Length: 260
Image 1 (cartoon, rainbow, N blue to C red):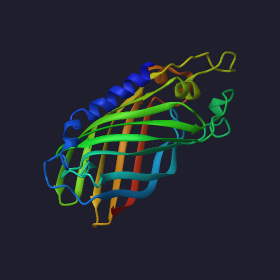
Image 2: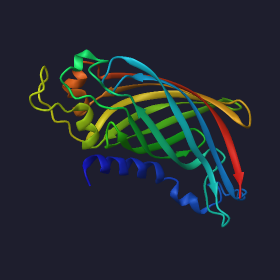
Image 3: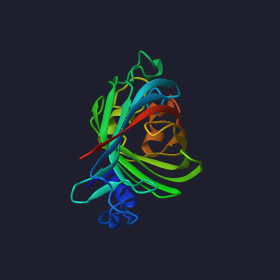
Image 4: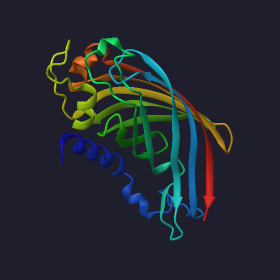
């Protein structure tokens, strides 16, 4: 198992560890079991982020929201659905825009990278004032590596339906991802040769909010700052852009419940 996979597994175990014993209970708090069924959220929004990782140019793009909130089987086994969120597993998606010399002349000489779609899974545990979460995704299109993020948030609820959160983040990637975005092959005009390896690629902080407008609808927003580190920060590709990465996101989602 390489270093990034060990990091990802450790992050997921950190997230899951405190809640695994609670799975044997109906909702993690000993309350009566919920009606067998599933609760999930679908939606979308706009994301303002660097054109490519390491870029100093901000690009506006859409992003999807697909989130599993609760799954209760007829035998009483339940994931999620605790009074403050409990444990949940949901799909994790990300879209990384193409990287071309046409859009960024400073990259002339480097191979273009097509748009990439990342698909994976996120695990989280939320208590009254704390949320632990980690995700891992596989790339398709522009890259075929693995990447993900882990974080811890402090959570406050100043009024009914409103949740505010903030906390640190750390991201990681394998050799396939790092090689695609941060390596420079020998003989590339205008760039020194660079071989980027798997590992931690950034650290940062994020803050956000969620407001449940009604029983069926909610809005959410987030702003964050990441600093590229390790080989991602030292890469000649980043040197023509910026190690400082800012992003802002806003979305609207619809909540669904289907009883079995």
